[in-house]
Length: 239
Image 1 (cartoon, rainbow, N blue to C red):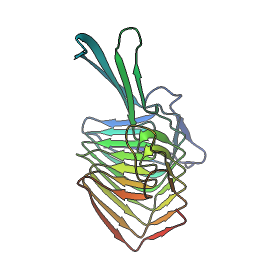
Image 2 (image 1 turned 180 degrees about the vertical axis):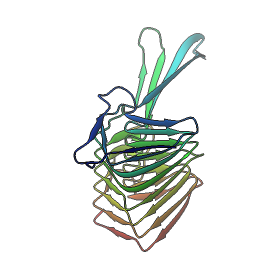
Image 3 (image 1 turned 90 degrees about the vertical axis):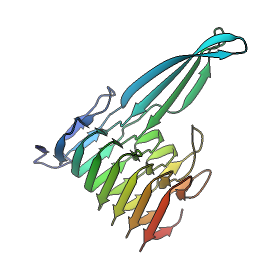
Image 4 (image 1 turned 180 degrees about the horizontal axis):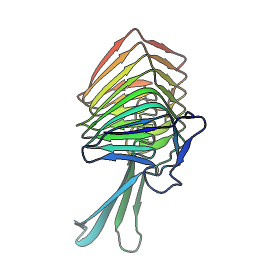
């Protein structure tokens, strides 16, 4: 196991990604702990694929570019995140362009501005995810084969087309946490859920406060498709 501790605390010790990929990554069956840092300046793990398509009697190329996890990227690992400030990580916003000369299509998507979790588990305690942005899951994104389990966390002033605070396709557990001032714009590839957007999987929200969130297209807490949402002892106000 690897444990990385910032002895002076998150306010004083900064890990800056300098807009060059994900600032922190956990991969390949890692079991690691990160505690006591500010994590900022991430632009995400980038993956690009291209394929040929036939359109109107001719061949074109469709290129899909996806960005994952600006601040923290967790893939196939178990990570413990404690006493962190994950802030000002910005992923590319959604775009869909057609080249006027060739007809080639380029689509850009992004998931998890502050935190992205796939095929693994992220356990959070006393983590602030603030002022992060992505197409889906401005603060955090949980994929279908993953889990995010958090206690005493704050999702504040994050922005996305869907799931300003968090979008989850997997398992989301938030206890004694605050979702405040997050925004979902509905201008990208998807829409819904300024604070919490549940698309599939299951979510448990216990003793949470959801306040001051702004969704341009739906509710602050939004459950759709095949998701299951369980809320207990929650305050939802001024959204």
